[in-house]
Image (cartoon, helix red, strand yellow):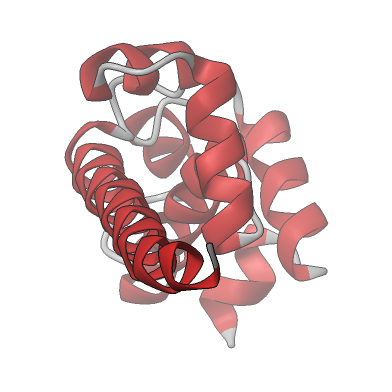
Length: 126
């Protein structure tokens, strides 16, 4: 009986590793999709459908491996792009607002301030 448990355990471990590897591949695919589509779509359901799993499953996988939800991943990508564009200074804040898909400048400014503690103009001038 004891010998059976020793033989089964490596198989169970292998299955678990394969499962984790599949989840990580899914997260890489999700990140690529967010990187390409974050300007046109900010809805979590859109990305879950493209990846082919439910939103609940996708959020669960992201939380387990990244300690973030799909929403937070999308918001992080938006912030990263907004900061890059603000620092480049090629477009006005109003242009950036609409280019990144925000409804208005006030909403964009609140988004930036909540995430960084600074206004878009303070970031641009720093």
